[in-house]
Amino acid sequence: MESSCPVPGGGEWARHWRYAGLPGLELLRARYVGHAFPRHTHDGYVLGAVTAGVEAVGLPGGTEYAGPGSVVMINPEVPHTARAGRPDGWAYATLYPSAGLVAEVAAETGAAGRGGGTVGFRREMVRDPEAGRLITEVHRAAEQDDPLTADTLLRVALARLLRDHGGVLPDRAPRGAGARDAERARLLLEERMTAPPTLQRLAAELDTSPFALLRAFRRRYGMPPHAWLTDRRVRRARALLAAGSRPAEAAAAAGFSDQAHLTRHFTRIVGVPPAAYRRAHAVPRR
Image (cartoon, rainbow, N blue to C red; front, top):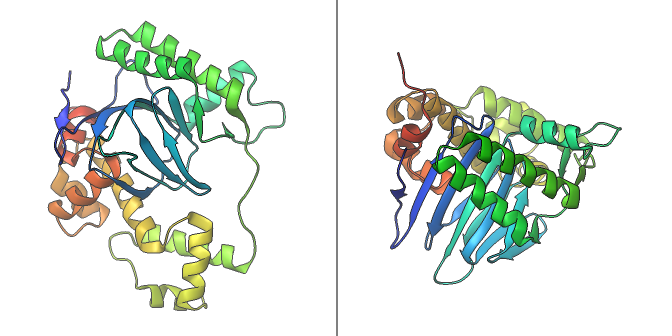
C-alpha cells in the first residue's frame, strides 16, 4: 500500500490514490494547513467528509465553511477553490466517483427519475455525520484491502446522498453569441494545449475582442482562459501519470515548460506532487 506523503507546510500530509477494488473511484485523505487549492474543476464528482478543523470552499454561489460532520458535494465541471477556514487547517476524507459510477447508482436506486438528464447534488454542503462516517469507512475498508466492505459502503453512501440531496440537474448552459465564442475558444485551447495563442489572437480568430471573450469565458467556465488551460493541462498530466508516464514526459505532453512547472501547478490543484500521484495510481509498465 502507498503511504501518505508530506506536502509543503508544517504538519501537512496527503494520500491520493486509486484502490483496485473500487473501479471508477479515486480517494484522497489529507490534512492541510497552509495549502490552498486554486480554482479548478473535476470531470467527476467530489464528496468530501471533513473530520477535523474547518475547510473554506469557494463556490460559484459564495464560500461554504465545512466543519466536522459536514459533507461537501461538488458536481462535475463546477469551478471551486479550497483553503483552511481557520489557522489550524482541516482534515478530510474525500471520494472522487466518476460520472459513470454515480449514474449507475442513481439509475439503480431511482434517483435518476424517468426523464433522463444528468444527476447531481442540489446542495454543495450539508451537515450529515452519518454520510461523513460512511465516506471515512470507505477509506478504512480500502486501506485494509477489503473490497466487499469498501464497495458496499461506497454504494450506500452514494445512495444516501442522492436520496437526500440529489436529483436531475437543470440545463444552465448560457446561450447567445458570447457563450458560443467561449465554447469555440475552449475547443481551440484544447487543440493547442501545448502551444496556445495569446488572448488577442484567440479573440481575433473568433472575430471578437479580447475583453468580450474574457468576460464570456468567465461566465461560461467560471475562470479566465489561462486558468482554465492550466486546469486542463493538469488533468491531462494526471491521465498520463496514471498510465505510467514519468513526470517529465507528462509535463512535456501536457504543455508545461518543464517538470518543475508541472510540479508547482499539479501540487496546488491535486494536493500531492506528480511523482507521488504516479506511484499511487500508475499501472506498472510491462
